[in-house]
Image (cartoon, rainbow, N blue to C red; front, side, top):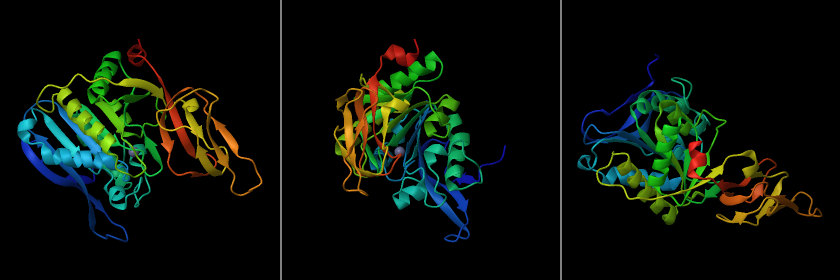
Amino acid sequence: MTPPAVACSIDLDAPGKRIGHLRLSWSDNERAYGVIPVPVAVIRGGDGPTALVTAGVHGDEYEGLVIARKLLAEIAPADVPGRLIIMPGVNWPAVEARTRTSPIDHQNMNRAFPGHATSGPTAMIADFIERIILPQAHYAIDLHSGGTKSVFTPCGYVYGMGEPAFRARKLAAANAFGAPVSAVVMATSSGGSLSAACERHGVVMVATELGGGALFSRTAAEIGWNGTRNLLRHAGVLAGPSQPTQTNLYHTASAEAFVMAPIDGLFEAAAGLDAEVAAGEVAGQIWPMDDLSRAPVPIPFRAAGRVLCVRTMPMVRRGDYLCHTGHPITDQEFLGA
Ligand SMILES: [Zn+2]
């Protein structure tokens, strides 16, 4: 196989706690012979399972950055019967620039998997994670928020795919994370996400959406902090018993669940986060700003459910995302029973 064009500055296998970076060689007008240092750390206290905790897959989502940074500060090898690999700023150029995608290659890390060894920093980081880290991992927690453009109710995200036994392990992990809501994606159109990469490697993944709007939500961060540690205990990566927590599953990601702007204008939202809405109910209206004599255009929800995420920037273009809903599903439906 082609060796990754990314070298890791620390030994990820030996016992102990080490902090380093991926040395990603990259040459452009800014850095002729430079290295992009992508932060990575490992805490290993024993031969138990391995978990990967990631934040900064998108660079403008802040709760996860704090959680990953704090985990690294507070956990010692004696707390870890397994191995914890922490990447607190996965798409480092995006984190530095406070942007969703990389300012160097303009790629979205969560569409870049399985990556590529040479085609650009985002793909090169994805390639390293897909080929070097995930084959060694049993569990993964990918900490996201809504970013600059949207805000989520604090929730877990799990893929309702795979063999029943694998699904059952994912359901147990979502319950251990214990967010009040877990959004379920039953099929994915993109193999490019880190979640899809985890599916390929049989890694039990809980992704999260913890607030957003490029703000820091204390409530969402607490849910993420408690959930991350409880899931790591459940996984046998952190010492101590996990608390018996539970989540509520909401199926999302169907085309009907997403409300998009049919015209340009100013979106006046009618329903906030966590509202329970009916199909046909008005999600809001768009005021055309290019013709002040035109009446506002009402935008209906196409599916009943709970509002899981809303847009934060009211000026919209045709085709822009406005909000989306999820509808409750049972554990049996998630398990495919
Ligand atoms: Zn994200």
